[in-house]
Image (cartoon, rainbow, N blue to C red):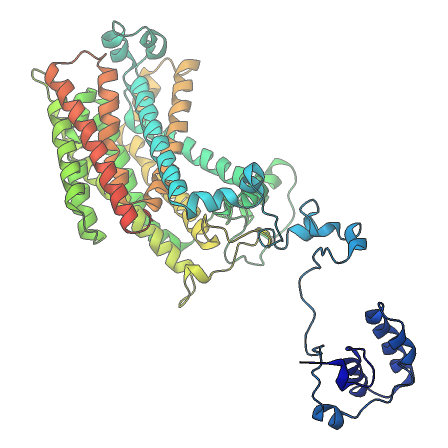
Length: 552
């Protein structure tokens, strides 16, 4: 223990001060400055300050031999962080206001580590990354996120089915369902547009336009999304490998032509950050199988839907879920539990019992198209998952992992790590959307011309100037956009089987409504057991999620 008895004066701080003075140069000006600065430490005693100049300092050898212990460590470096408010200096309360949450310069450095301050409520959710942390790092938040995706995708699929039924079967709806509900008189109309391929092409074009708009919207609101911890939703603003070429060279063009040329040649913006017409051959090769499967799925499904009643359409595609079980086991090596297998097969059988009818007129085109579309509908989520993984693997440097990837460039350094996804995951997601939509339009575009639908429309359709018809087509394109991106989002968040299984509750919800709730007793029993099987499947999936610490 250090004691005043071991020193020439009773001041306990003098040995340490003399040690500092003895290790520095003998410059009188420096000694004078150190003496004046050290006197502030002895403000409680005026005697040491006066006796400092007359004190005979010891050499370093003599000091090492003494039993005193220096109280000051000169090897300590200043803290790199900003000063924090201390109660020991009351006079600094007026000048150190940046240590509090009111000033962003101080509070943004370490908002969750500041003394006694942690934002809560809406401020913590929307300004300090709390929403992203809650959604993606807590079990309850992740369950809410999946529930919102499931409800959103199911509702959009139901709305798209109704819109397509109105466009393709308006006359049939008015003839058969006006007696069940008064709303059908308003929404069915008197026009029928029996051209499923042309309708599909128009919806694909509208879907691509909505995707472009949604990408720009995420960039416009990116400051708020980043603050909320949802930077994984923001579309990339620039290409991954931006070239130095400014675009089309030569004489500058003015007017509308110049604007279009600059818009087409720019290498920023668009959907995935590479411009509106981003087209990289390595990415095209990765996304081409998915686009082919998507085109086959949409074309065959709409062909079956256009030439069959809704119960027959559902019966023709009843094997979607069993085929999905087979594909997920073969291509993703996923092992399904007994509860998942039992619930999915029971739901399929009970839906079959509730939907089957006798003395119903069917066409072979709708049955064949529906059966073949079942394979592509079941394969589509599996290929989404495989393509997304391949795109993500191409973006991550070899030997690195997603946990070690740096934060996004638009993420503020004061925020906690964003749990909504890395920049590579966001780019892979938007690339998947961009290339799948673009390639699907290019592949699908010749089909209405080859089928002769364009020629028939030009000769036989006299209601193309009717506002209600185009309003329904526009709503169908909006529903197609919502279904397109949410299918990819749900598949990425859960599994292909979960996405495919939504076919069963969607059919169990829509069929009684479209039939006016006039069904035989066995159909009601079948629908009740079908909903019970859906609840069983949900319970089994939640159990698996807890076992593996979340559905991720």
